[in-house]
Image 1 (tube, rainbow, N blue to C red):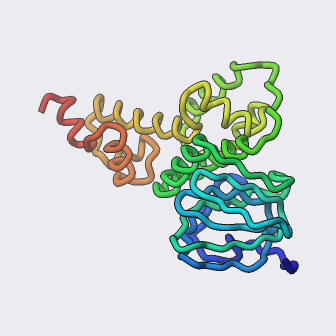
Image 2: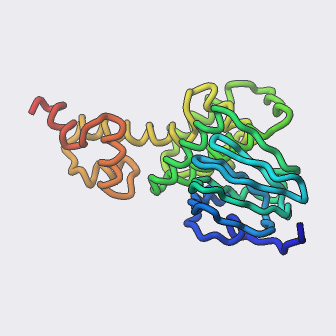
Length: 263
């Protein structure tokens, strides 16, 4: 394989909308059948989760290898690789994660990768002010999947996780998980992984549940207009409130208020 100049473009320059997520850049890529991407490299280390379909890849003159759904691939910065899509389209998530996040080519395939990839895809589809936090937390969870050795557990134990939860309650609004981890003296990978293990959801999912519950209480206990409820609960507009409320409670905010008042 001939050498290639580093490229910051996703999948060798294939266009796709990118979402900043803390220190990461996340792109949902849809690759057409029989696409061939010649040897190229990225300036930053990358993660790639295959959501649907299958493609072949060779990295640094290694034999071609096939990657199918639920596969997580990590490549260090500057790793020269080429890709070949077969007869069916491929959908995958590509994350630029930074020069020191991945130090060698690593491949992991598991049900946990599939779940995390699906959650990240859904998070990107929402595109609101909590998307960055939610996506960042999920990328850290994926990095945890590639860790060859477990991270040391902080001496303070679970009380740091309780503190992380309390900060989400006390300081509503968009945050970066990496900033939250720094305030707590934790590695972001540990915080992302341990938070889900302790509370059953990611940091981003927890923040979303707090916000929709805040809106529910305002609907139940006040006569504020829906637009004002959305503003006070932390939503950018009423449409985002309605969408999240329907997802959480299977009814619109107006319908919930009517039921709460016995209408």
